Length: 213
Image (cartoon, rainbow, N blue to C red):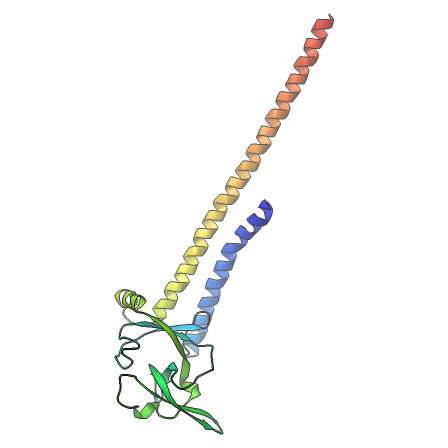
């Protein structure tokens, strides 16, 4: 059991390193292809306008499921603004039209009186994912720590994984060293006991010979 546990401990840092490297590769590929970086199928975005208040507040950090393709009316989605792809919008679906070439979506901010021209009848190609949650606290932390791109969040996650891996490696190296020391110490104790037992036998034999004489 101890050997199995030791093997598992030895494997953990490699797992963390693999995850960190996989995240780095995934983010680099996403950025190169002008796609949104995600972590395990979820993206994070900072809300900078009040168009979705009071459902989502300005400054909230929102979490978006980028893996799903199941979008329905009243769902809140994050998408790239048609015609201005660099702009990321999070609004609520108010209408879906089925066409021979695919679905067309119309959205509106819950705090807006009506849909804007560019969010009427856009294709699913613009959709990044479905809103699944938010954090006001993390939004505040993000604004305090970072000034520009949300990509910094992914960098921090990667650094956390790397730090965990380093800590795990350090702990395992120490554990292995302690384990080896224990083995050496046990071996020394066995040798000492064996030597003491040999000396006892020699003394006993010597005492026996002395009595016979």
